Image 1 (tube, rainbow, N blue to C red):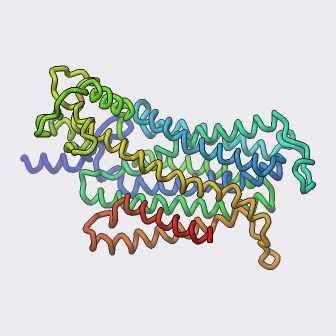
Image 2 (cartoon, rainbow, N blue to C red; image 1 turned 180 degrees about the vertical axis):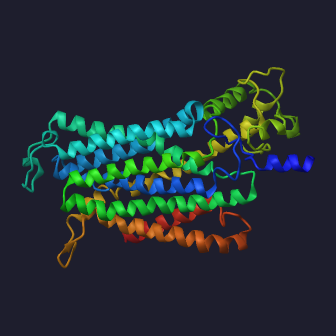
Image 3 (cartoon, rainbow, N blue to C red; image 1 turned 60 degrees about the vertical axis):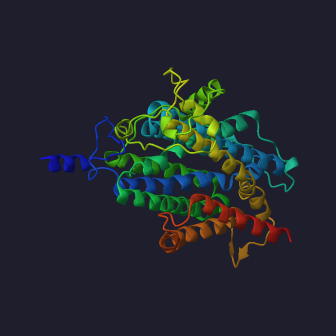
Length: 431
């Protein structure tokens, strides 16, 4: 009887995932690669939509809105920077209030509305300055405040939408695999590789087909197709709703981090016990009920461990669990990694701005066919596309045997190798 009861329990996910109504989900009915297939296909169309706009944006600003190269490049990087900052807000709303699914869905509506208005802005003559064939942009009629308000209003509405979709769609995909099940945990590692493959696949289509349409057919169709692609991606995502697993909101991680820091500061003069087991920690059952892991105390950033010293007060701003402290430490350890990515990110930012403008000065003709300037970035995307397949199918399997690490090599090692290539390539270019 006990064995049958254990078998029935094992049929449900152990990581706290539920359906949209909050009920526990059967492992065989929801999640896994079936649910992730909708997420991956969504990402192909969504990336096609986003890069269909961003890849060639600088040429629209210079050729159609008659802005200078420096101004256009600055406007593009400001917008792209906003695209990458708004996910912080989207992640907070999902974790603390609405959950990932509903945050994503609301953000998708905002995203789609921004794309629709943007398509109108490049299509209607009344929303853009008249055409100008003068090679000197300064001699052309500038865009009016109305033109700029509609265009940039649509762009930044799109940015707000991506702020809710970008941080949640990948985590929705990750939620489909139960970390408490060894087989699903291994599949989760592979999911992120194929997730990146879907990103590069959609990006490559945008960098080739869509930018060609924009340069040679028209911007109305060139922006209309990405908008249609985004609509298709949202429909695909919604079609997978019956198969998704969901994690309930657990509160803001920033609030939990603040509690640890405040509690540690309040106990500035408290002496840490020599045995970490004397620190405050919840029972293992408290974590397994919510599908979480308990994390043991580590000696790094020891000052924060004071937040778990028992002093008689049970206030969450005076006493935190060891696991909560270790989660805070993990977030703090991310800061040096974030800083280390500033320079590579600065280099990548040139691809959609000065790199594209430089491409306009090259001889891009192959017979009667002329390669669009923005398509030159397709070589970057193509190399990534091939690398992801080789990495997941061959490199990881070889390194797993050598390192005994399920990932092949650690994430930090992957980043270090990538940065080393950045240094070598940068050195070669400078010479």
